[in-house]
Length: 238
Length: 246
Image (cartoon, rainbow over all chains, first blue to last red; front, side, top):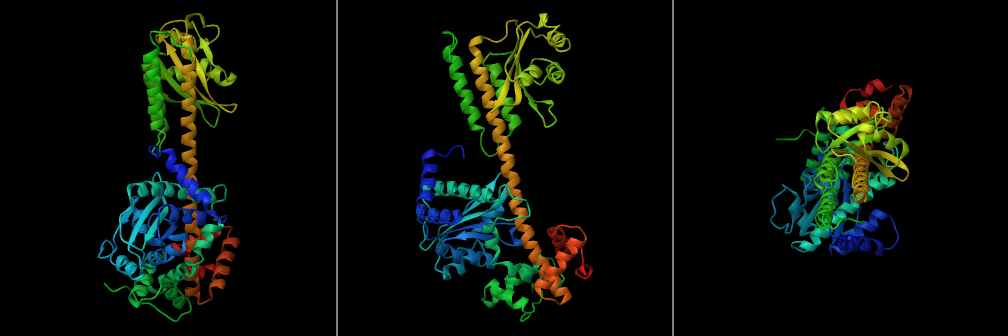
């Protein structure tokens, strides 16, 4: 960050300060959305170095960012996952015809998204999550927007870290706990399927995702059906 | 700061370069030892001292060598002996700069340190504290081959160098702290997810509802004096069978 000019940092902080009072993580998303002229913004957090074990959990998102965040969680793939895993920003200026992921782009276009830009939240070798910008029109980020986005990502990283600072390791900040509220059943269902099929929980999550994708339902719906024993899944077919 | 006319421009310029170069290293992949090595080399390049080194106080209160302009045996030995006596030890104890303007006449003051320093070719020495809000973190050590100590006009420069070293040290500690906290956040998230996965596994194995599965896990952890997340992890990884929870 040595090369960042102070004016840029002040602009990001200014955009944050202009947001109405509220939870800091939501103010951050709204500020990023306004500053970077994005249709939606999401901040997500990973639990382990391999996001496929349990997926990225969305900590906060603007209204326009929720669909894209949920889609990536359902599929277990997309720009945020790649940015988180590789530590590099992932830019998809036009989702139409993009084939970087087997399912993401096509499904995102159906939701009305046309461009996605994901930035890793990372410090040194520790990958924490991703900041993701969603656009409803195709187009590249300007170099100014790109540089601003890197600063916003750094800001998001500091914010998440500070929310956790000073707490005992097994006590998660309520923000993170709340972010799990939508995915609790998915993780429970992973446990159930892992028993039913005799496979690790990470693989069980992949089975759940594959089923949701082929049935055109959300991962949460499939998880609920599994927990209520209305659905019993078979192993993945090669 | 006052500097002599003939050396002023080059020394000032090189000093500015030093601070710019050091500031450049204060970035994400910051390495404190590399930073201190670069700083000690600069002190020698500025012709303030023949050789320099930095000692830091560890948790046990001992002075530990971290970097030197030249990692030569005689120099390392001089750092070693400072845990018993010497300018650096005095500097650490008093918190103020300590000068040894004539090491050949310092045998009474430092019977162990002075003769060794002289035999290593040094005639004077100086130690400047790395100070932070009253705490002494360590010291910058300078060794000169001539008696008389450092140029009085260079003292301000040396103190500035010591302050830069202190900032470097703080930067490292801040990074360590941030990394520790980030690791915590991930582990905490993994813990919560692991508990949910374990609930699913137990409920399916035992044919019981989620809340009963959680009760079983919690009861097991308590009666075995285990942390909940450790028990959950054991269930998820298969180390602990659901049937063994009852």
